[in-house]
Length: 415
Image (cartoon, rainbow, N blue to C red):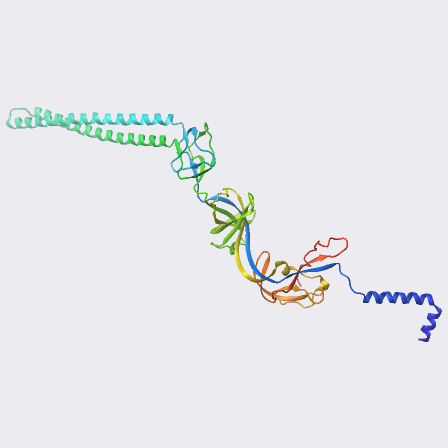
């Protein structure tokens, strides 16, 4: 100690510098640590937890009927327009019937010709029957005379030949009658077909509804040679509609018939409409290596606000708990700064949340058991109680940053 004191006396400047450095080291070691962030917490509450599957789809009428033309020709008149209410049997359009009317008249003439041929055949059959009777009596008379020796065998043979000719003529006339009757049946069938085609020049509504699409204009020509051309689309009943939505294969396992659905459309962004899952179609649809399944939703549209073709942004409720102990979903993803984390490691497979401790930067870890997980909240079955403060994010307090600007929700990752 005497030597140290002597050295200090000999070197006062160096001694002062060393003392100052030591004082600075002690101050830096003992002064309170400053932070440029704070933890933000939210309380554990009781309330509703809802799990949803989101998707998008199109609104369709429950029964959309495509009305086409079964005959070819030029459209002479269109009687309806878009959004026109129609009744079953109402005329929608007409095709020029001139050609088909001529065909009907031709078929009627063929029927008349066939009936005249039948009358002629009947008359010929009457004459043939009369001839057969006359020749039958002549042959019997010749046979009796030949038996008594009053006439020759040649005369008997001639009478027999005349009888055979008359009988052949009668058979021929009978065949002509059958042919004439068949021609009548054929002509009448052609007349019926022509009249049917003529009636089809008037395109009528097969059911009551609303015209939602018109694909024809007056003066246009339709050709029904190979397939029926579609002229109109009629929505049979727009008071009830359906949404056809595609659900990803990762979510389809949670969707079941009867689940409640809510959706919005761009036309009414502030309105939320209700629907119910009616059908889950098992045929997979693959688009760009993404597999999805078509889900059909029933929609009540009594007010008529929804229109076919609208895009629906769908939320299918796959789970709901009315009064659950819950925490924000961000609490399960939140991790404190590395230096603030507790040293213990949570059990494998468990969920960990962090609650505010006695020291602001020393949060306490809580191991919790979770249940239904929704988009905003997660059900907590054990490990927390109502009123506990769980950490959900950090907020920067650095001078150059706005106090309300948030950093990432802690440091994500494993423990």
